[in-house]
Image (cartoon, rainbow, N blue to C red; front, side, top):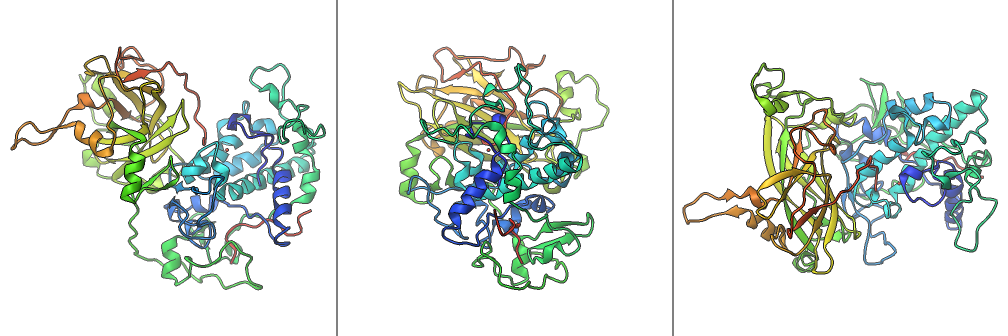
Length: 557
């Protein structure tokens, strides 16, 4: 499915050479049980064409099951992991799926060095584009160490491989030798020495190395002879699939939504959509049927990403609550510059002088969103807050709701981190970003009285020393920051007890760099709860990641 080489240690070290070999071997094992099985590719470009890709039929029982939470329906419900007590989970909607424009940019290139780190340009960076669906699916797929536990991983990477085979076809047509076009420059410090074309791959256990498997082996045309791919469906017929329709505006095929399929009385809740289609093709739907189905989607998902299981039972909540600390967070949001509605609330392009530092609130920046951002930008905005463990493996995420109409708004929430102990503080990297992928600038309270903000990079150490900035439950954390001094007093929030703030400003400022407005750039609290580590921040990436029958798209008729 994908052209990933060697042990997958990080996306930076991704080598796209061994995908066909790996998935050919996977299919060979699967065919011991079913001689006709193939691993279908998930052409997420079809879902990206939708107004809201999270509503795609691909996240129904007919295909991969729910896009939010645990696999409670579909062919992978109850899918067990190495630990039999856990299953994978998802939280769709956070990243950029493949786009037609992005794939076209890749296919216009002729050398692998134009697709891969460290020499690829932004528009044709194959590895960066590959990471977007990992983030979009979220949950387990967004964990570099666990992504392959979600079966959608294999179909996603099968599509990665399909794109690369199309690229290599163009190379052959241009007379470029595909087997030797390995992106490597000796003595260039930008390249990892482990990626030398003559370096042995790490696919084998210690003491069982196969000296014939070196990095450049993944570029062999022998794999091309073993695997064939179908093309992504095109208009007007879209492969004759009832799960697709042709978008007349773009003349591109796109996925149908769950609501569309149910309105058309198509069973997508029990249909074995991943099984081989019956002989003959069913008639596709004659016309797109408009519907007014109002489907309520949760803003906040009631499951624990850390424990990979639901948190609905009171007993489970009480048990897990003792393992986490809950830290209050404030979100300050500037009106997104690409939000076009309710113009009377906007301050953009209005002449204002003498504002000083407040001028930032009326300036339009060029902070780049996901390509599909405008499709789903609405009045109620969502800011996702994430916490990645540094000295432990826990990961958590939460949403805060904002008002995109206002020039500037303020919201609050709580993020869960691993509960610190006296000997083991909890070290995490926190970040926040909106539904368009734009990252918010982090600040923290520092000093013994927690009375002022300091810019920092996002690295936080939380200990048990005073002043305490977390609660041992969600309720405790929330109530700690609200004050009611008298019976008739209106509740007020004490922002000095909110240690973390994110400013979603949408300007040209480098998020993790200093500015003339933010002060020293990092701070620490002597004997306090937060110590801002001098962590260097880099470019974030996902995560964290002979066949007789051609591999097909998932939308079989």
